[in-house]
Structure formats: C-alpha cells, structure tokens
Image (cartoon, rainbow, N blue to C red):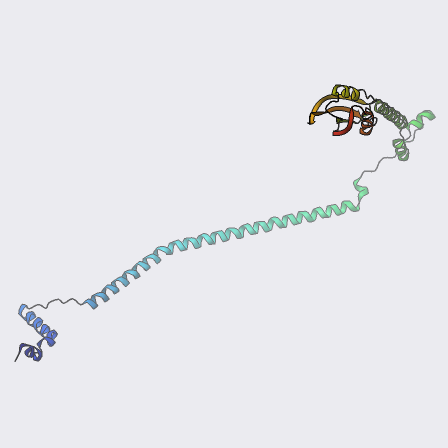
Length: 275
C-alpha cells in the first residue's frame, strides 16, 4: 500500500476540532484549572453594551445640565412678557387721558364759536362833544371807514411822477437816436487780385503798370504788384486793389483797364475776398 493510499484512508485530520477539545479537557484535568478561551463574539457584544451604557449616561448628564438653563430662559421670557403687559396698560391709560383732554378742548372751542360776542369786549359808546367850536367838533368827530379807504386810494403825487417818468423816457430815446445817427455806417469792402496779360514779350510792363494805376475812381485803392512769368518769355502783371462794393465793381475795373489796347490783351480776376 502506498503512502498516498494510506493518507486517503486516514480520517484523523477531519476530526481535528474534536481531538483539540479532548486535548484541552485532558490538560484541564491535569492542571486543575480551565484555560480561558477568548470568545470574540461575546467580547464584541459586551463592548457594544458598554458603549451604549456610556452614551446613555452622557445623554442623561447633558439633560440634567441643560435643565437649569432652560428654566432660566423661561423665567426671563415670562418676566419680559409681564413687563410688556404693564407697559401696555400704562400706554392705554395715557391714551385715555389724551382722549379726555381732547374732548374737553373740543367742547370749549364749540362754546367759543357759538358765542363770539361774549369773547370780544364791547366798545363803550363815544361821548358826544358838547363844548368847543364847530371846527373842533368836526375835527374830533370819528372818520368813517369809507372815507379812509378813499384817502388811501387817492394818490396826490402819482400824476406828477408819471409825467416826469414819461419826459425822462422820451429824452433818453431822443439821445439814443441822435447817438445812433452819428455812428458811422459800416462800409462793405473787398480785396481783388487782378491778372493783366500783355500782348507779347516785347510789351513794356512798366508802362503797362502805369496805365493800370492811372485808373482812378471813388472807393478804389491800388495796392502792391508783381510780374509773374507765363511762358515763352512773357510775363503778366499781378496787381492788388481794395474797392468799396457799393461804388466799384470788377466789371468797371476790367472795362477801364482794357481801354489800353496797345499794352493790355486781357484782364482776369485771380482772387476776390470780402473784407
């Protein structure tokens, strides 16, 4: 028989817990004291029980500590409510007093409105003047209210003041009109730049300028001039002038300058500006 077959038929290892228990009992008999075997399940239950007891004790201790504070808060709340009730009662009393005083005042106002003659003292009648002259009696007599009003409306000096104001106004208007008439009127003027072209390069430009400047008119003032090259040796005269718009125009200048046919071919307006 092989070792494998022997081990296959052996059953001792399958009953190991039973043999372990028998061995433990044997050693207990020999030593006379049972061995303490830890019981994991029992220990866990005991730990849970101890933990639950501890929690219960803590909760009881907390409730016992919180009891006095809750009682103090309730007492404070009750005291505040009672104080508010007292304050409310005092306010009710003040409001009642104010209503009573207001009703008394209304009664007094009604009485005063119903009897206005009693409130204002009556004026004593004026004693008649028996002594003195007629003029003194007339002066001492009371003046009626209608006459006072007429005197107030009567203006003894108003007419004279109005006349003086009208005269002063007319005088000032007259002075303003005279001053405005003496002021010189604004004269409209213009600045004109003319281009005067000769016939050819042999034209005497100095003589041409003399001819142009010889044109004279009321409101015409000649200015500076210069010669500007045109081409092929020909130069044109560029001359400036200032004219009064109401007296001199560009048409008049062109007409007068072109009369010098021996020197002038044409006249053009190069620039025209209002002054």
